[in-house]
View 1 (tube, rainbow, N blue to C red):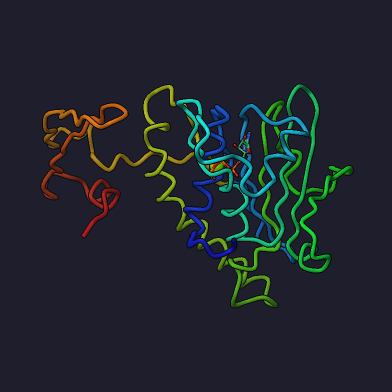
View 2: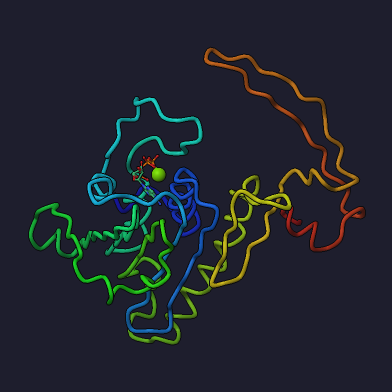
Length: 252
Ligand SMILES: Nc1ncnc2c1ncn2[C@@H]1O[C@H](COP(=O)(O)OP(=O)(O)OP(=O)(O)O)[C@@H](O)[C@H]1O
Ligand SMILES: [Mg+2]
C-alpha cells in the first residue's frame, strides 16, 4: 500500500480531492519541518465526519468502486486517504469535527507491524496533536507524521532534513495550482488553497483568459453513458506572453 506510485504532490492532491468532495471552500496545508518530529497537515473546512464515519473512512477500501456516487464526489475506490498518506508517512492521524463533536483516529504503521493487527487507534486526548488548534467549526485535518519518505537522506540532521522537506513541499505547489485550477478560479472561487498561510493562485493550462489564445470549437463526443465535450486551445506564441505566463504554462 505504500508503493502505489504516489509522489508528494499527487498524494496531497488525493487528500484535497476528499476536501473538495466534502464541499470545503478552504484547504490549508501546514508544515512544521524544523523539528525532531516533522509533520504536514492538510486542513479543510468541509463537512467533517462523525466518529463512526471517521472509523469507516480509516478503513482501507471503505467503499465499493462500483457503488453509485454523487456527481460532485471525486472518490472511487475508498482507498485514497490511506494509500496517499502511507506513501508519504508511517503515521496518519485524522482529526475531524461535525455537529460540534470532535473525533480523531490514528494509523501507525509501526504499531500495525508490531502487533500484526490492523486496529485503528481512537485518540482521546486531542490537545497534544500538532495542528489541532487549526481545526475549523466543521472540517477535517489529515496529519502526516513519521515522514520517512520525505526525509530519506538527513535523518539525523534537523536543518538539512527540514530544507529537504520544504523543497519537496514547494515542488508540490505547482501541481496543486494546476490540478485544482478550475475550483480556484474567478473572483469568488469555490476553493482557496493556502500553503503555510500563503494563498496559491490557479494555473490554467489552456490560458483561456489570455487574449492571444485561440480557442477551438466545442465538440461533443457521445459515449455510452453520456456526452463529453472536448475543446482545443492553441496557446499563444511565446513572444505574446510574459516570462512568468510562459513559465506557468510549462516553459521550454
Ligand atoms: N476531508 C474529508 N472530509 C470529509 N470526509 C472525508 C474526508 N476525507 C475522507 N473522507 C471520507 O472518507 C472516505 C474514504 O476516503 P478515501 O479517500 O480513502 O476514499 P474515497 O475518496 O471514497 O475514494 P478514492 O480511493 O478514490 O479516494 C470518503 O469517501 C469520505 O466519506
Ligand atoms: Mg478520496
